[in-house]
Amino acid sequence: MPGSRTVALVALLSLAVGSAGCRPARGGSARSEALAISHAVVVVPTSPGEATSFLVLENRGSAPVTLVGAASPDAETVQLHSMAGGRMDPVARLDIAPGGRVLFAPGRYHLMLEGLRRALVAGDTVSLELRFEGAGALIVRAPVLRYTEAVSEMPGR
Ligand SMILES: [Cu+2]
Image (cartoon, rainbow, N blue to C red; front, side):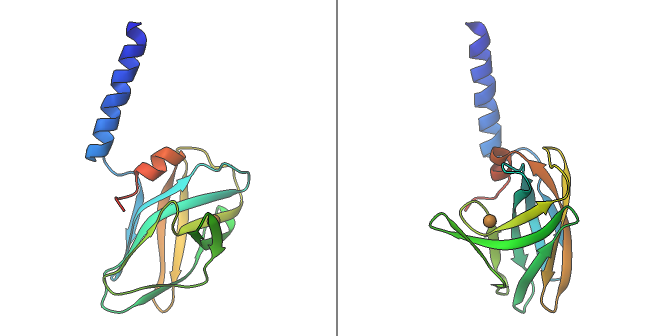
């Protein structure tokens, strides 16, 4: 069937383009003097009322920085979670050394948005605020993407 061959070819092409990293990044980014957030995405919720967010957080300053919380106008709470052995645990504080980079990605840290105030669908944008001890807050606008697309936005690990 010529039709299915075309579909297979298109799928192959988009895979090649994706792995070559030739398309513009869609993840949100924000920065302050010392901190940089990039690749910020929110995954389309799979269970009602909660969503996961991935991003990259960098400390480009010369002093350690501690992430102490997060918030979003679209959720009642935003928790920082770690992931180990398939289990999620809330984390109260996360230290980032000078020059350090923390990956919030599947199987690692992530932000957990709970008590969503609206239904999030692909194409929406969510505002996330990350709060740092003694370093104020940083707000990033993250696109809502389907899981596979969200994961493909994350840099190599
Ligand atoms: Cu979680």
